[in-house]
Length: 144
Image 1: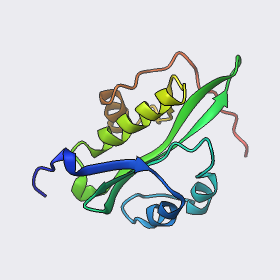
Image 2 (image 1 turned 60 degrees about the vertical axis):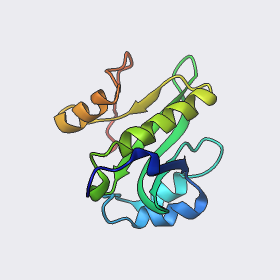
Image 3 (image 1 turned 135 degrees about the horizontal axis):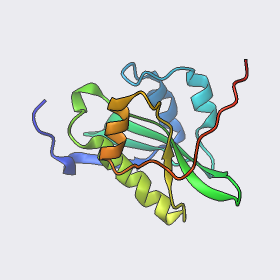
């Protein structure tokens, strides 16, 4: 694909009718789709769709959560995906910028994404978008 004019990319909030379409994308590598679908929607949903010429070419699944002590609101970014033939055209950045703007309107001061510390490619991607190591420490308890 030739260079994409970013002004042709429309970013909008995800609607209920988008969910089944998004979960059917074979390029999105979504596991346990029914669980994702059940979490989408409602007042705390912060998911967005990217469209070019009316076709869905990317999305971001995110949700506003209330966590910690003292209780604070954060936006948890669950997944960002762009169709392979539209990657490297800034669509992921446009999606993230829309999420960032939306969070500001909701008085949410941080967006959180969990990345495996060994996944240097994904770490570099998110750091390139402005993410940095948090002052919070993620602790896990295994349920085996």
